[in-house]
Image 1 (cartoon, helix red, strand yellow):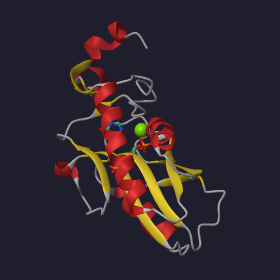
Image 2: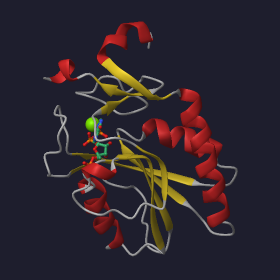
Image 3: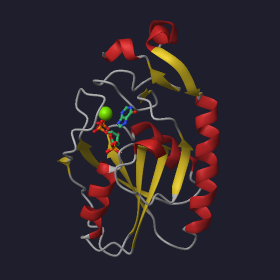
Amino acid sequence: MDTADIEGDLTEVLYTEGQIHARIAELCRQIEADYEGRDLLIVGVLKGAVMVMADLARELKRDVEMDWMATSSYGTSTESSGVVRIVKDLDTDIAGRNVLIVEDIVDSGLTLSWLRTNLESRNPASLEVCALLRKPEAAKVDIEARYVGFDIPNAFVVGYGLDYAERYRNLRSIGILAPHVYS
Ligand SMILES: O=P(O)(O)OC[C@H]1O[C@H](OP(=O)(O)OP(=O)(O)O)[C@H](O)[C@@H]1O
Ligand code: HPA
Ligand SMILES: [Mg+2]
């Protein structure tokens, strides 16, 4: 995307492509150490986690299986509807597997809280969360996320998979969306 086209739509760039990749590499070194000698299934939560899944999977220096779930709670709003819908379920039976959920963001925490409960009931050997971004001030429920890229302010962000009404996902950096875009 030509950033000149969307410059006026962001109030601030929080993380550049280089900063994101460097942080993902650090998380991968931790994941490699923690899962040494064990199988690993990473589960990406569509659609927001597409970019972080793609970069994380390729940065991991180990064998890994990938599966996807699709959920939706934001739709075309900047606030969670509070209702998490499964749009696509896993193809894999996760019973007895080491599962790592990969998310772009933990905002209110409602999506992951619901997802954790849902996946726990399928009896994985282990279930952990890796989220690139987390908004501590927005938490409505506590989420145990073992791997977190960055804690960010309580503002609506876009880029690197994160959308507003399906736009901005292909932005390489992550930035704060200017209120005039959605108000
Ligand atoms: O912690 P929460 O408040 O639940 O917010 C986090 C979730 O919201 C976004 O998904 P969204 O519903 O927008 O679907 P998308 O990934 O397809 O954009 C994001 O990708 C997370 O999955
Ligand atoms: O800040 C956000 N930006 C984009 N999508 C989101 N989904 C939850 N929080 C966000
Ligand atoms: Mg979204």
